[in-house]
Length: 147
Length: 163
Image 1 (cartoon, each protein chain N blue to C red):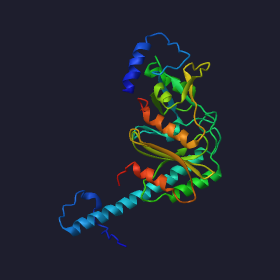
Image 2: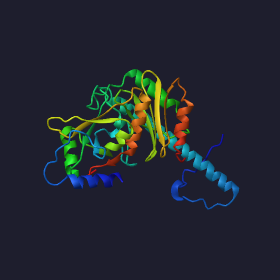
Image 3: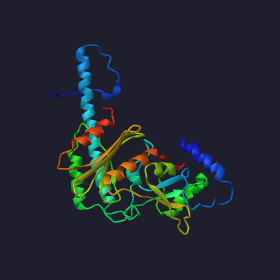
């Protein structure tokens, strides 16, 4: 269902010219979390580990807004933002984040306009873990074609 | 205590089906299955200790995830080893990695939507969260005093891993 919605949104939004990233993150926007660490992915079970979604010390989980981008463009952003190879992606919809009472704030950077962060994490570690479990289980693991 | 005596010349893995019909044959089948199960569990647990060592090695430096992650301290390493050592051998071995706050997380993945995760750091406080199917979740915090809390054991069992 999520894959279908993602493709549908891309089909409508992605038409040749470079898409403009809207300031506010819409409920049905497709998002992705690039996964660079081996212990964030279980390729055999095709699962994302919950720890992949835990916020950093500033209380932010870095993600990419992928509305209107082709598969190639999404992978290329991942390759560009880090020296380490992108091992996988965790794709999900903004609606999942909102359902969990978290927020998605646009955080565009100079060469990375699609950058955003998940914020609004609770203070208790177990509550953060619960949300990370929910996000990881709602996400769809995408592996690079040559993986 | 029972022991299995296997003739060195016996090709162990050539038969996958027990064609015996007697009760003795069935008993023997169960005993052999239990021996292999124990070997497998022990090998998996040893692998888990290796994975823990590897994760701690990776987390020695600060910013190991390039998002400003905290390094895992020696005190965290000690608590994590004690946690893994205390896990009952009847539970499957977890997947091991580091959290951005420098704690070690132990995760059991039974399948999509069936996951349980426990984190522990130098405070010795366990934070856990799990999903056991659609709409079935649990999370909380427990002290770790070298015995695995019942809540944690119950959650791993709730995932319904097959022996």
